[in-house]
Image (cartoon, rainbow, N blue to C red; front, side, top):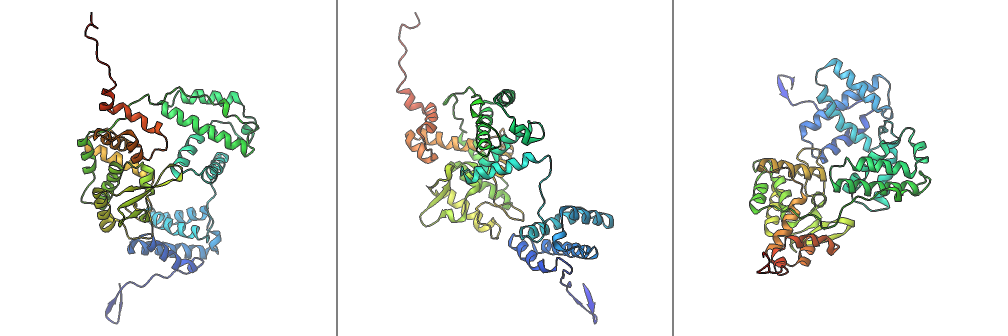
Length: 410
């Protein structure tokens, strides 16, 4: 507070001077639109002002604010005050806005980052040419990184000399340590995809997908593992009902349990996907397909409560958002974390979100629905995907069982 003529007045508005002054209005507007509280915006602009003055003394222009200069400024702040963590957090928000606007340089990925460069190109190929969803791209790139990181430096020379013997040796070694058949199969699929891309891109001399051995495993060799009704109820009741984040988590779990959505599908839901008048919800599934499901009363109730009472007011269009600014759409990893926390609170072992999808399918079967109807609810493209649930359709299986011969024990 300042005192003028014996009267108090409010804080003097912060004004940014120096090389960053043209961007003050942009930073304020962007931070407000991303849901930052007024106090957080003030802290960020205050840090922007200090940074701009520091740059001015060193005769730096905005384009000279490289990542190294940012770290140099933070080191300066550490020397003059003890609030470096706060400074880093506030400054991080400012720098993100400036980089997004093209006002300051974007950091170039470093490391022995030939691997990172190949993965960036490969990810762009998966998104643009193959049309894979973001979560699928993440999984493929994660597996591909293991293969590329195993090659000796320099990477370009290793790829140019890559042969079938090296590929097969890597796969035999790593699939043995995968932990499960499905993990090994995921590695096989990703490496084959990577090798196809590397050949098309001219980085390897020959198509080597045939040198990736298959993993022994058979369709329908396991039982779908559903949960009991009381376990589902415990999961839905697990999130904290007194906090906005807890009520958001309950809405997420209800969507998974009652509509059978995959975790990535729940994360991808947009506000425009909910048709309240028609009582339908559009789901963006595998293969970029958009399908419509009925919006049940229970799901509609928890969604409307979350959207009206707890969802942050911001420009983001996703249904489910992070609980703290900057507000962003939840990711598949966030959905898995929500499920994990609910399992812990409900006293259950950590389960994947897909377990709720299995539970919905087995519940529908027990209610007397035929397998094709289960496939429609789960939005399977192939009947083979639904066929596994025949194993838990006990009523249908009972009609196929042959009676035990009376004298069979003799």
